[in-house]
Length: 564
Image (cartoon, rainbow, N blue to C red; front, top):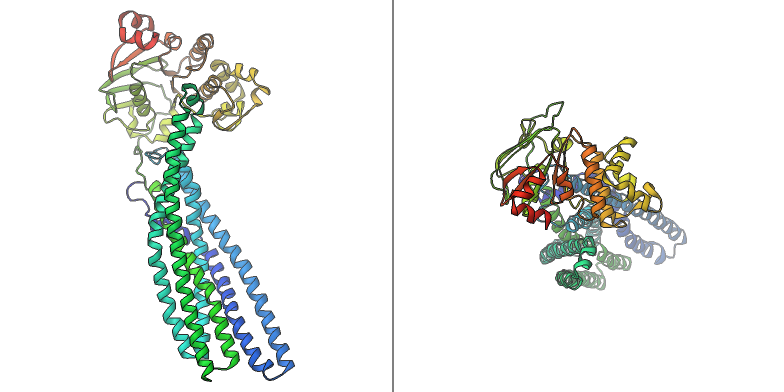
């Protein structure tokens, strides 16, 4: 998905086309309902002319029976037509949600760039729902058009001037409604952008609530959200005012139009050109026309909002991937040898590094930005701007990102847990119960299981918020170890645990990963001490490599990063 992805218009068109059967069925049944509604005042006029005026009781009963049949028909048509329309709207929204989630979790990435997680959630829920309603809008719009056509034909049969008033006035009203919806579309798009941003900021603040409390930044966080929320409120009020103005103007124009129809019909009755029953039918039809015209007003509003949502959805679907997949394949038996030559990305400057198969390598970065840039390249969230990274001699850029991640797992520092159980979070990466137990023991997560009420079956809330920071880290590390990848890269996995536990985890990781390539990106002395070798990443370059104890002796920058 690149720049040639779908446009907002394409998203709307596909939403309707994908549900064409239900939309067609709902439109036909809705048209039957509207035709029946239009026939009701006509039949009442016939009853007046042929039964009431003439005093014919038999004719009265016959026409009342016909009227009852029409009522039953229009009632069932509406019921099943609305059901088909609702089904089309929900299915269209569901398909869009699936497409959006598929794009967001695409191994190539890119959809999340420049968007907060809460904003993506808003697009996948509220915007998808609004686009889905276009299926219902099409159905109701077609039904309303049929009602207008039936009403116009009947009025033409009653009186040509009345029919012409409807046929000429209706397109004018529709055009006016479309033009009046333009400001609403612009303001609706701004409203949705601000709302999504406010949702993203709120989710961001809730996620970091403990950190905010720890540093005493609650007031700053509240002030930030208040500003964001106020901007969202202003945009919402502007959109609401635009919608109110549009609805008010359309309703006023509609009222004037109906008044003109009633006035023309009344004058024709006074002049004797139409009968009393025909006048009743004409006035009833004029009142009936209020319904279809109000529907058109709603359809215009709905399409205006759906177009804005479709544009936002198209922006995610058409987002260029962070990396392009290559066509190369990894060897069937991976050794786990990594080679970096001249790698430059972000703050990195010409990184040269070799990692032997089965080696436990520590990487100590004096600048956290250097560690982040390295992790992005190793996980193939981004390709190096310069240089190359090879896995068993195959450049990562020539591989599919999904293949890279089956061979090399990069476990980031802020890895989230999932809602479920403690053991279930670890077992998500491995089906072998023995591997799960071994990984939990190595990561110290077995102590977490002993400390919580139901052991491994203890429920874990969303993102692991029911656990402490140290408990979350140990469970996340256990999950990474249980995955048993040929190459494992972990980033600061023990920043929230005590020194004794950290030493035990360092030894456990070393033992469990024996014979498989492991990279520990950290400044933890306990973890770096168990590494075969440590690379000092300073100023965006590899300044030196050697055992932890040697680097402590000969590098002040290393001592500052690791021991301070």
